[in-house]
Image (cartoon, rainbow, N blue to C red):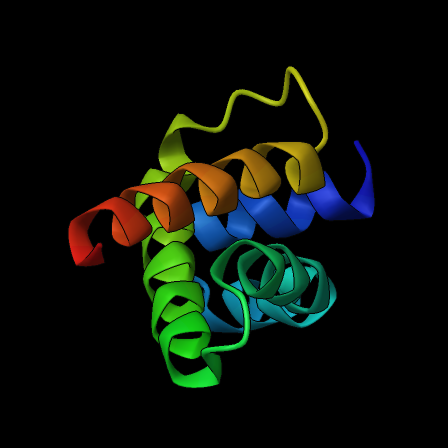
Length: 89
């Protein structure tokens, strides 16, 4: 089992340091995805990125490991961002 899989398993069990480790490792990519979709509105991008991470951590128990965590989180980021943009526009 890889280090990332162990970290995910610990995060599912509620280990805050594991959640922080996932966030630290993947936040730059998630932030970039959100900023690209939102555009120049920095405040909105930050708000949506925070919502994305809340969704990622809520959905973490459903992560099956069929794809890499980064791919799974990326898809959540895209979907959540597009939904948020639809609500605001």
